[in-house]
Length: 287
Image 1: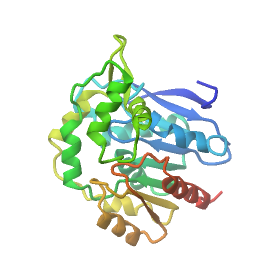
Image 2: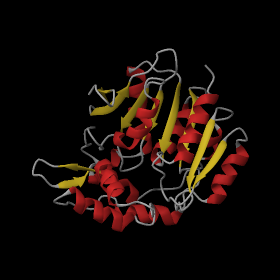
Image 3: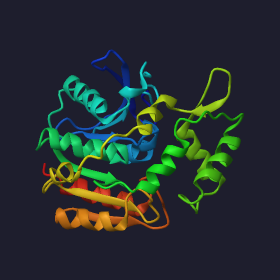
Image 4: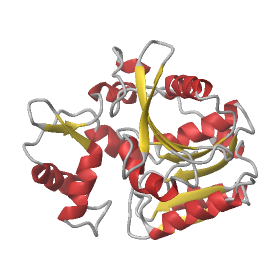
């Protein structure tokens, strides 16, 4: 699509043959691109507002992980794990011949940002981690497990928005119906039958039922070293604790921390405080 939003649809093929999708917002070839990586159940639409702010000054690539948005669904739920997502992203970076980039990752996307940095130190030259860190709070994970993968459908966007408001009122307490409809159109899609449903493969929930042994993610986080880094946390987050947020800033003193008031997991990145932190991070990236 080229027009007011100024992006083109791009596609790449994973190692196991899935056709995966990204949005490509135009920007100068003289700068490293920005790679936007969404959360567990989310898609490229999460970054629409941010991409429109940055497009023209930066090339912005908004990825849809396998099983989300316009990316193909996997035949097996057990491929919905970080190792496979990383392989998919490596295939994308290879296809686009990207060697150095800035990453903006929300939740799962932030974990992938840290892992991309750890696997090839030096290629992530700036990053924003949105409401995620090396320690994930068990209560927040339990909340997510409780709703991911459940079959849901609604007849209208207003019905979907009101249900979303019932589920997430504590995350965005200041939202009105217009805000909830806008958020619902990021979360959900319309089927051929005219019903509104979550815009992801329900099988993404399968690996969460048997997560295995926890992995120490502090080394991956610390691999970001001295690059410009924005650490964004929702004040009401049940995924990233205030203590972990503080420890992250302590371990990487060049990182800039910001807490988005009155918001849970995760900030939309439209909040002035979040936008300001991202813009400051980008300004600090070396030419």
